[in-house]
Amino acid sequence: MTARASNEPKLCFPGLAGFYAAVSDLWYPMIRIVAGATLYSHVLPKLHAGPEAVAASMAKSGFVPGFLFAYAAIFFETVGATCIVLGLFTRFFAAALAIEMAAICFGAMLPQGWLRMEPTFIWGILFFAIALRGGGPYSLDRAIGKEL
Image (cartoon, rainbow, N blue to C red; front, side, top):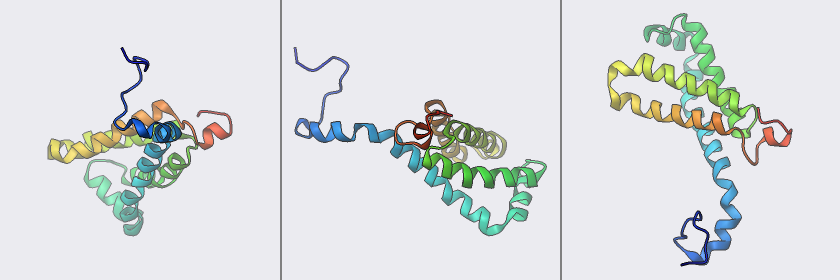
């Protein structure tokens, strides 16, 4: 029998136990920040093309009225992404983005096949998990004392 608790994982490099302990609470903020920041690469083409072009594309994909969906996507992928990065209103924006990803996945990409919809499906699951978890440590939600 070993001295470690049964629910503790075995360390790959036991000599780094101090490092692991020091950074163990940083994994979730890193996931939240990277997931939120990744959305900027998706919204930049929308911002460059303008809401009219995005609305036309949305309407062509079956999201009518196109302007409503275009402005919602632009809003959630800019303001929502920023709030997720900061950990502010995390549950709300992550849930909204999970719904957006589900709509894109099953509304626009399903007819194109699994390989086309898989990345959006995975991002939707990630944002759903963030919505369940909330801002976590090192978030503005926690700093103001409310996990929203």
